[in-house]
Length: 442
Ligand SMILES: NC(=O)c1ccc[n+]([C@@H]2O[C@H](COP(=O)([O-])OP(=O)(O)OC[C@H]3O[C@@H](n4cnc5c(N)ncnc54)[C@H](O)[C@@H]3O)[C@@H](O)[C@H]2O)c1
Image (cartoon, rainbow, N blue to C red):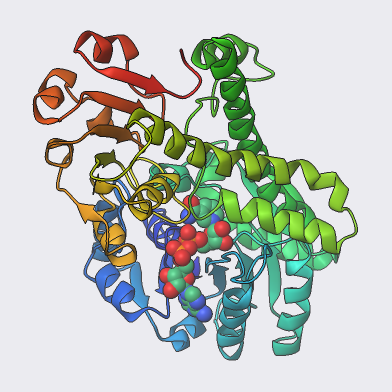
């Protein structure tokens, strides 16, 4: 199949390279010239394990190229919209201007492919009702082009694997049966490989496909805030949240994943998706149905401030002249993404309150420097911890989990660590002479 991916960020770049590696001919379009240049040189413009190799390999086959020129879309039949849908600057809803701009830029190049009428595939996460609106916008540009919604579920840090071997594929198809059949045929050809491998396929209408994505993210966010709420009760009562999580996780109705208490969720998806979902529910007149998500969001934000307060207490009630080593800035390990990162929020807050903060992160240092030039950055944990009055583990990178508490103790001023991700073995750190604190564990 001949595809364009429109928007080559965390979603689109991985999708473009993965689709080319599955045998399709792919043009990745983006408005960001620097990003396109890096991609054409075989470099991912962000950190994602295995992505550089996948891009370079796909470029070598000749089936993948990147461009800022929308005219390149004319030869392609399927156009996959992967642009960002961030939170609006002045409200909780999703900012759809990039989706609209992508469709408008694509419009003059539709239906010129020799392979047949165009299929526009929405893959960005959007509020329910967006596809129906875009379908009308598309119809004004082309009488033949079809629209389908096909949400993305990749996890940063596992994006290549998740895109090549998704755990499910969801199609949101047009109401008209003939349009739905033709759109489905094209999507089936795009996903021939994963479908042949038995990937479950779930088919619904536009609204269902849009809601699948935000429902999944809302559920995950709720699970995280749930265990963080339990952690707070554990701290007040002397129970251990990690033991509770393990015990309830054996119930397969609950499951063990996403039950690690910590500083909460962040990134370019969960926070903005639950807020946009609430905003959309309000527009649909069902505000109360999702009012629990407000609590999920509040609980999540509270976790960050709880760690700031915990640090303040540990330092004897002052940040002045206190040196704090922060291990991790990305919102999760194996990513350089600092969007809505709880780690970066905490580091910035501590710095803003007068502490001498040194941050280290294996992949996100450049992004931190670009966005928070005031924060000092160290190349590794041992350097960051030199002379520290306290160490905070805020992103559970493997290299931080593997730190030797004895060696780290040699360089700090005070061996006190707050494990904001419940990622370390408390006994091992205490045995090495550390005061070890974590979330919801005695
Ligand atoms: N990042 C994830 O883990 C993930 C997972 C699932 C779904 N999503 C969803 O995917 C979408 C994209 O997210 P992302 O993380 O890749 O965002 P991103 O900001 O990394 O990438 C968006 C890209 O779109 C480009 N762009 C903006 N306007 C454009 C236009 N008119 N034409 C062409 N390119 C344009 C930007 O330059 C940027 O490179 C969002 O809706 C997000 O919610 C993301």
